[in-house]
Length: 280
Image (cartoon, rainbow, N blue to C red):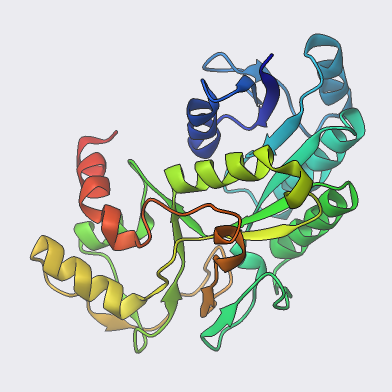
């Protein structure tokens, strides 16, 4: 019998996790707040709604938490990530919860190499709430996956700004960009869910293998697409995430046998640009 996988969040990443999981030994159930696209409707911030799930589905062997804050602030982070993961742990205490967090919890600004052992001391409330959610997942013997900047079909802030001509190389262009293709992120999450014995209680960075200086990235894109190199300017104010400058290491995750199909953001730039142009 196939193992039951519950995907809590049926958006950009969750849909790809579901697609990859189908036919690979998993019986998949998906959740979303709206219940669209054949997902079960469930507001993760509601303990009653999450508890009601247990009466309607078989206990999952694994839960992959891919829910999004929908670009909300601290209140959204608290209700989705902190409350949502707490309710899933309480309702399915035997299930292996793989929680999607973010490398934004690392505050480093000196270009240093960041591993899972590096200090995570975010300066913004949203980052602190993510860390709190991580802690309760680890206390529940779950797994934390800290994702770098997510891009893929129809989605790339870096590439969209470059192609629109609105990109700015911040200061000297030496700030590192850490990225992960959506399909690689999905395969990493499934790999962690499939190896509960070794991944429980662990934190993993989910990033590609080639952090790029921002200036080098835009120079390479200028060559690939035969376009001008963006101008230099100051670092932007009022960023949603705090400004950081670090190289995120994926060595721990790669040591488990996982490897990204797109080791560098530049490997997928042409394909992603086509999907941006087509709107897919």
